[in-house]
Length: 407
Image (cartoon, rainbow, N blue to C red; front, top):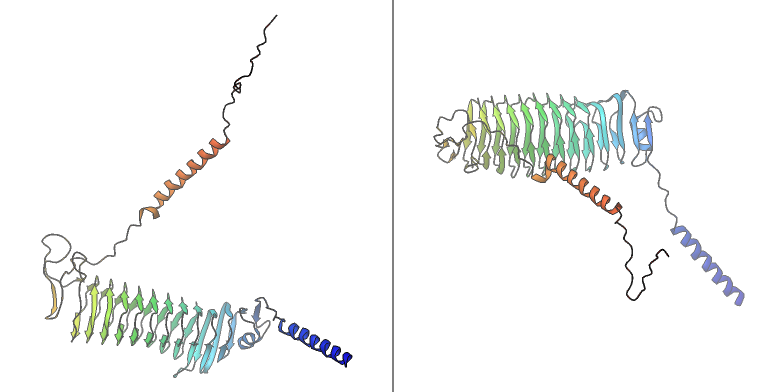
């Protein structure tokens, strides 16, 4: 019995020891590597499937007939030279669902030209970078669907039905793209807190930038020209529309059932209808309205058309009032209708005033400060290195002084 008990105890200890060993095994983390197409894998999809997260896939120059490429892990896809991915008119070319993906430098074309063919599709994606691609001949060029915190930058999106579309997507950055010859360039649907900035939006047959039920977005510094409508808001509140140039459109800026939007510092010129509102209430000031056939079209709307005195309102090239005191603001309001007027119309086009940086940020102040610090450090160093003059010690009290004399 005693031997059996000892054996049982030993077996139990052995099993516990093995269990501890099993649970302490840690997976070996692989370092990111680079895979090449077609050197390592013949297709882009096979390279993605074989890659580990954070790997880079270099696609060599050439044309690749691939469709429905599914990017389901965090990889970086980079085109080396001119790389065309032809979707052969299937549904999609690239579909991205993983976070932290980068796709850069490709020509992506020929998804299904009918709905819902997509050149580059982001579905539930986060922190994806789509940079420097040419996306053409698709129904949707670049589509963001329930996607957050992505960057769409410096792409050329042309000859698609919709260029760059956002649907239920938030906190995305759409910057520096060229959206040309699409039916609709950059439409939003129920998408909030996004930035659309410094894009070139040209020759889109129906519309340039359109927001439907989309709130708190920044539409900043875009060049919009030769479209049916320039910037259009429908059921969209709290957006900032600032510093855009909008020319040669049928309707440059239009808002329907949209309020609390700030429309400021835009150049609106050579349009059939400059700015219009229907059932909307917004802030409109520091804009330039020049050479438009109709400056304002309005229906059931009351807007604020100036920023008070002395900030002023808008520049209207058909304003006929005077400026007796020379303060740059007209002495009489620019009357739009019985409920809307610019109380402080500007006498000349609005030009943004470049703010002077504070003293501590100016280069000359920094240079003088740096020189002063250098002199101070040098002086301290010099004083520390310098030794004080040596003097003979004074005799202590009670000590005899012995003088040596010649005998």
